[in-house]
Image (cartoon, rainbow, N blue to C red; front, side, top):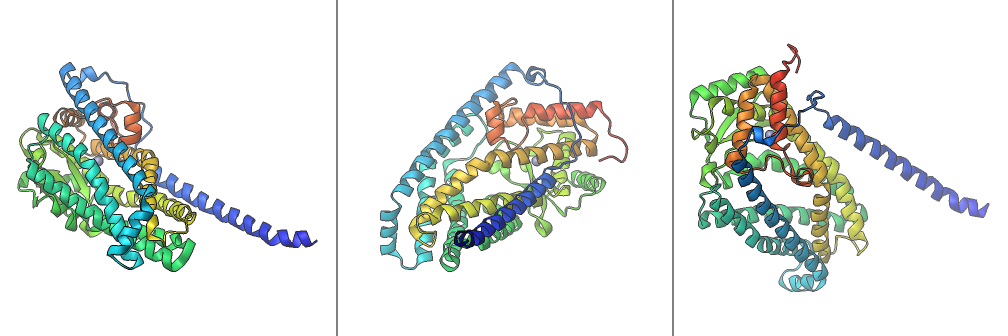
Length: 422
Ligand SMILES: [Zn+2]
């Protein structure tokens, strides 16, 4: 009886916890399943031969460039992880030294976080410099060292500010709320991420580029008409002075709600791309806006951030909790590892949304030939690998491999959609 009375409340608590965990898991999976859906029909894409679209020399040049880039990327990542491990190892003496410079828990934590960010930046700098040399050598960039260094410094500043805000918030909450701080910390992180996405076009992007309205009135009218046909409401189509640092062409969407915009690189408009190709890429970007991919991206961020912050709280609790500034390097190391671990899922989602934008753009333009030629030209002007190794796509691929995108366009060219179908 006594034993039972001892065990019963405990049994009830574990049952309640199991039920909460089950409900959370069902909600998580339900949300993920809803977000995973796209308007792309079941397609059996043909297995194309890259040699039908690219010359042997083009394939060789792209593969050679990408092999080197990947080696530099992996080398930089390995170096940063090693140094990060060393910083975690030496966190106590580091924290003691920081404690002699500034007082106060949050200020110490922020200074320690900034030290980690600056150190990792320094470790990665030679790899970034080597990447820059290769980009210039391969004609992908005409940027000088001055501009390059300025870019590096500005991105370091942006990263330090964002990490500083996150560290200050986490340590402050952990000190006030104890081990359950993550219940407030995770929603706060999602709120901050939403503000960053909202403010990015107004605050962060102008640090790197100037933006002008599209001066080609005929093209602007064509894109407006395209948007109206797709039922997409977007106020601004802007041109960025991307040519200050690259010869490659691209376009993107940024911002949400009142700040949403489509941005075309000025390199897209320098005469190398036909009108049909520019319209194709614009339709792709408009599809991102129409399908609210940035909002969905934020929803995925929330799905990954909540368990991530909970795991961070659980892990740091083993050593006394994140209220201790000396655990900031461990916390940041966890965030890096967690991001690497969840990157395959995040990229699978990204590839799905990119395929959806491709598909809807093909429906809107009805011009698969331009879409194929656009993809072909992206590969030859950006030296992307038309058929990257599977592990590269799985781990790093934010877009479907170029040949797969060509296959979709080729398939869309053969099958006319039913009228009124989307
Ligand atoms: Zn896209």
